[in-house]
Length: 420
Image 1 (tube, one colour):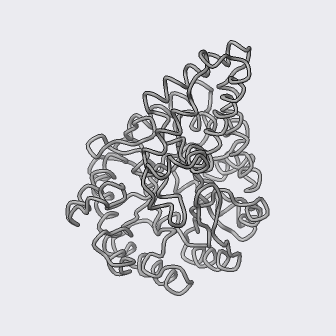
Image 2 (tube, one colour; image 1 turned 30 degrees about the vertical axis):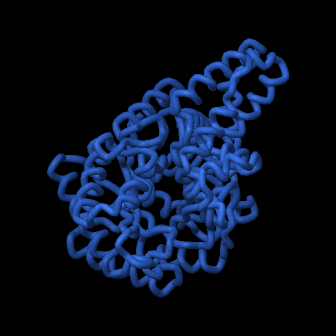
């Protein structure tokens, strides 16, 4: 699986097709599990769209910084696994490995430990270096988190840190003979007030001036806040078509594209708008993890109907217990329950069930969960069913909703045809 064109070329060809009247929006997919990686590549082979795997530092990162919760992946193992799956299923289309929210304090522990600024920036640089040495194609430069900042990080600081990080990556890639790297900047958060059109354009303008002065490429994506917000198992934000259109037009003016984060669980009627207004790309991750977990629970229910209690797996209990104790649910819960103790949560079967579904994907590599999953799938196979096929199919159906609404069918071939 070797791309014939890089991300910059891919997005340039995308803009050419848009100018010819073709409307489509790319999707960034969080690599939440091996099953999700496989499902994405199988669907891309069937539907012919470019794959953008977007890995956060919590999901995939260097072993020296703690690794990732997804299959304990570092960057090399992540890329190698995806390439092995691609070879296995015969996929040879466009597939790009992307860093989502790279930068200082982007790992939860770095932020909670309040590591010093200089150390946080150095770790961010070394993580990026491991990215590009492992075959990553696009880096999200996001220095908008800072545990020492009261509120949002000032725009001037964001610009300075963005330039420092890009300068480091460009210097290191050239030193090592690594090909062109694409960039994404901005965040779905307020980013120093970067929500309304004026500061959004001001940031892009200033960044372009500073990048041009150094001969660096313009980012292919700028993240803007369109009103989306993922919490629990739904999108609780208020998507705004007018804002999305305005920000998209600003990006186009500066030769870049608007990228929307937190696109999970949006209704089809909203997704269908995205190609029309020229939104370049959107990220989705938690929804696909939830779909995989729900598929596992479907199989558990089937198992329970045909096996005695002593012979059944305890997969649901294992996932629920690990999910609650892992406490990653605090990021997704709303209201006062975000601050509940583990013991308080465990007293409510309703809360435990919600967390098991919402955060089950975080537990897939836990030894207890893996053992119970193996027992469950063994039981399901004894019934003459294929549990792996069922799980993969459920994930593919979830992804395909976005591919269809974003008009992505057949776009990989058309993009390649535009690159001379």
